[in-house]
Length: 104
Ligand code: SF4
Image 1 (tube, helix red, strand yellow):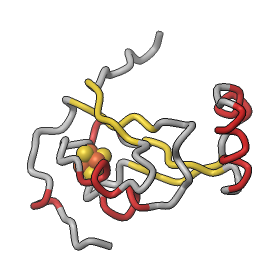
Image 2: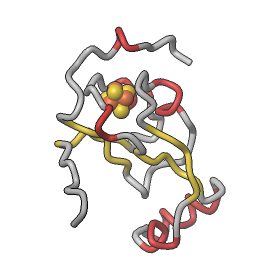
Image 3: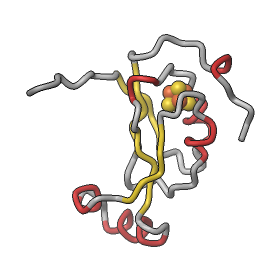
């Protein structure tokens, strides 16, 4: 842990959200630990997730138990970039957050 808390990340939520590069993430958990808003979880890759990987990405994923970081609460992101600075694989970027329409 870095001691990050909500004071480390005072921006407005719902503007941007992190995107994980599936060919780079190695499930090292730094983003989970550093994010003050519990935006990430480490989860198993689904077959659909694996199907998007390059050959090198598949080998990397296999070597790390087929687990990676997932953005489970994108609406909570406050754009502090702590996760981006913490990721040792440069696997994260922030992108505009687009709320999905419900019921469609
Ligand atoms: S930029 Fe990263 S660390 Fe900061 S709130 Fe968003 S997901 Fe969490």
